[in-house]
Each structure stands twice: as C-alpha cells, then as structure tokens.
Length: 307
Image 1 (tube, rainbow, N blue to C red):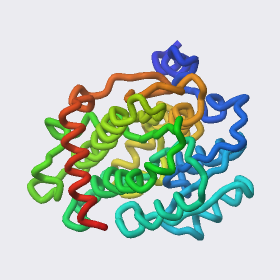
Image 2: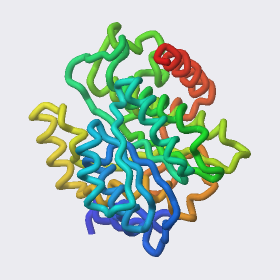
Image 3: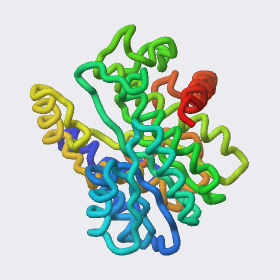
C-alpha cells in the first residue's frame, strides 16, 4: 500500500480523517432549529457546507457578493435558507450584511467564515491595505464585530485558515506593511492573510473563555475550487496535478469546517487549529497570544475608520 493510500485511510482521535466528507461528519445529526451562517456559499467549500448542513435540517444563512446569485444557489438546497449580499472587501457591504443577519432574529448556532481570495499575482489594495489581508481577515473581523450580539450562548465560530499560513512572513504579521507597498509576494501575502485568520480565531477564543462560545480555525486541505481563479496557468497546472495525487475533493474539503460547526464531539473545543477533523499543530507564531492581541487591536483601529 502506498504512503498516500495510508494517509487517506488514516483516522485520528475524532474518528474522522483525510477522506472523511461533510456528509460523514454530520451523519445522523438533526439540525432542525439551528441557524448557521456561512460566508462564500456560491461555490466551492461554502456551497458544499451549505448543501450538507441544509440537508441535515439547519437554516442556512449564506453570503455572497451578489444576493441574487447567492439566492439562486441556496434555492437548490431547500426553502429554509436566507441569502445575504456581502462583499468582504467593502466595509459598507459588510456592515449592511451584519445588520441584515442580526435583524433576522435568529441566534446563530454556528458561523463559518469560509470565503476568501488567494495568491493575487500582483499587489492589489483596498482603502490602502493589501487586498488579501483586507478581504480574508478584515472582512470577517468586521462581520464578527456586527454579529457578536447575534451569536447563540453556545455558538461556534469556525474560521477557515490554511496550511499556507506556514508561508507567512517572519513573525506572522507585518504590521508595518499591511499595505503591501514595502514588499509583496503572492504567496507570502496569502500566508499572512491565513495566519491572520488563525490568530483572529485564537484571540476570539480567548475572549470567549467562560461564555460557552467557541472559536477554532482549520486547514481544509488542498482542493481545486474557484479560490484558485487568480493563479497563473503554470500554478493551476501544478495544483491540478496535486489534486489528482492527493484526491481531496470539495466533499472532503468541507468536512472539517462542518465538523467544527456542528459535530457534538467538537462542542466545547476552543482555540484550536484543525486539519482532517483533528487537532493539528500550526506554525509556532500562529499561536502567539501577544501577536493575536496585537492583531486584534490593529484590526479594531482599522475597522473604526469605516463606521
């Protein structure tokens, strides 16, 4: 048996592993009466998570850049869904989305921060900030700011990071280069955005201690989705080869975020980083409490510029 075959067949302490799917980790669950928010439901992992959680009976609140497109996707999964427009790189759109979601009057049992952009080949900015950092981290940070009061007492926040956080600059976050103007690389900037996701979940978990709420981050696996739309042809080919070798599809890729959002065994787990539905070890500075607090403070200062 090959090494890859062994890896795919291995299960961790949770009873799930590399080959587990979102349907596997939610099997037998009745989520009727639960409300779950998922960002980025129009494609990829967000769409698969929405499909499976709606199938288990949850009311899925899904966001996408266009309310019409989001509504069209969610309509395939049943009537018990709500579509909300949310462009994560536009603070006004994020604030409006948070307000709409809060006004639904549905306590959020889980929030899955799934949406994002990846490896922009050239520096792009929004409001003076590097676009991947501003979209992947700040967009979700500001959305969470507006949803704190809507989170249920035992609500779970699930933040999709990536093993790509290993490629973040030394120290994790370049606080003196959030614009990207003092040096930019497609993958180092993406790595910084992903370690920001991890640190955001870490600090949120600290703030949740003693409340019954939890926050965790995860690596979904290497999956070819619309997230890779900005990759150049050579990189797309490389990822295509990797996908054939590693064979993790969207059904498997959505497993860990669904596990953390609804599986009973994940209840009470707080401040951890997961891979293949099991606790994993991130880069050391991805767990640094001081850096996490500094990022939170910096994020609050940035968010305050967009009332």
